[in-house]
Length: 345
Image 1 (cartoon, rainbow, N blue to C red):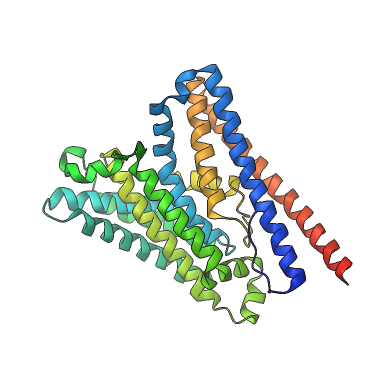
Image 2 (cartoon, rainbow, N blue to C red):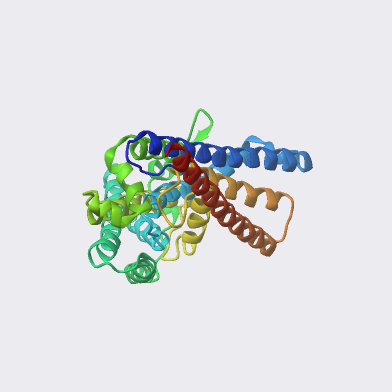
């Protein structure tokens, strides 16, 4: 367990919350230490890894996955998962690029808002299937993964939109830097800080943790579980729509295959970042750090000329290690809480 869990505001439970918070901070600190060690070792082997260009590429490579990981965290802490995010990214990216290519006079902010709205609509479909129809999230979003991608293929009709077809002002959003930091990374950071604050300080955010900890108890506590789950999926879809905009702006060339398979990277980042796959705990900060760590590992292995298949195996091993660590931490925290309650009585 590596995050904050919603608990009643009693003295004993408050101590339990502080314990869980400490575990979360330690877990996130561990990712920071791992990043430091990775940069130190790889930089010693190849100093070019620490160059501005290399660090900028890592930020660019991790920005979209970090943004998607923030949205995925909202869903995962409610004890659900969204496998369709890659298809939503692809649909939004192609839709936005197509509008800009075929209608050059359309304002870029309007296109961005339209992509976010399209993503939110896809999220609403998932939320209604899971929250209202009570279809298991794994099944529902696996179905919409293919459904949304099918819509994307039908819409594209084999067409590809190139950078030359889109306005320079839009493409600059994917490459421009502010004080040396790529704009996509700043957008991801702004979303991260906003969502992190909302989860920790707003009642709606705390209720998401309560739902993930125990859906039955959340219902008894008067929480509108279906509405909160729907909101989490809609927010996740909206962020996927924004990620689609960032994808189109950064890469320029867009077709119906955009972001295929990217959902696995997002889920890996969330789990590596300490968000419990069974819900109820985790932070968006850990998920974002997980995205940066995975992007850094990929870059480091490329610099060290490690075979691509070995890179996949290493990422898989890291994911399994994170799941095992999460389980061990959950058991230790649960045991500590039981001892604390026993001593208080």
